[in-house]
Image (cartoon, rainbow, N blue to C red):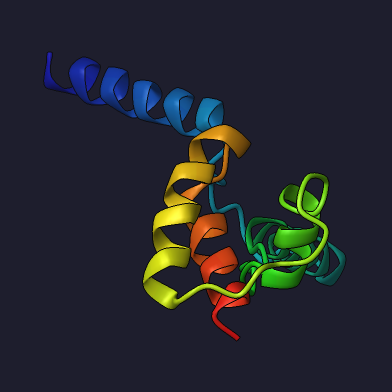
Length: 108
């Protein structure tokens, strides 16, 4: 009875390994198969790594959102700029990052 149970467990494990894509050791693999597996693994790793965005360019954000209505930025104090931009954020649908970028642009 134990041999039947052991055989059934072995077959179940084998079927699960084959279905999940795990390789079963069958002896020495050819060099071509190793090279293909290595290049496939490298391409998968490369595809998963994405470059991080550097940041938002304040000049581009101002030109994209503000310059359609405002020709040249007027000079206000930094405190007034923050208040004005907070009110304009709602009207222009700005994100928090874009709001900070425009405040940096106006405080130059």
